[in-house]
Image (cartoon, rainbow, N blue to C red; front, top):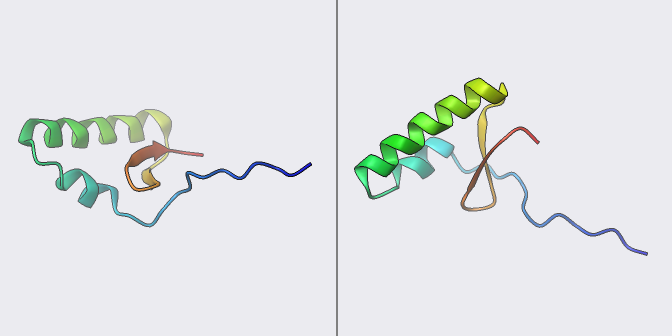
Length: 58
């Protein structure tokens, strides 16, 4: 039996640049605040998983 491979993996994409590319100003500001809050609460820095998922920790 073969093991399933995880398809969504961490990438080197910059989280701040990803959020800065959000067109809507309010959504962009909210995303920056949320990323700061989640970093504080989880104790892990934000990192990109795949092309469009921001995650915290493993």
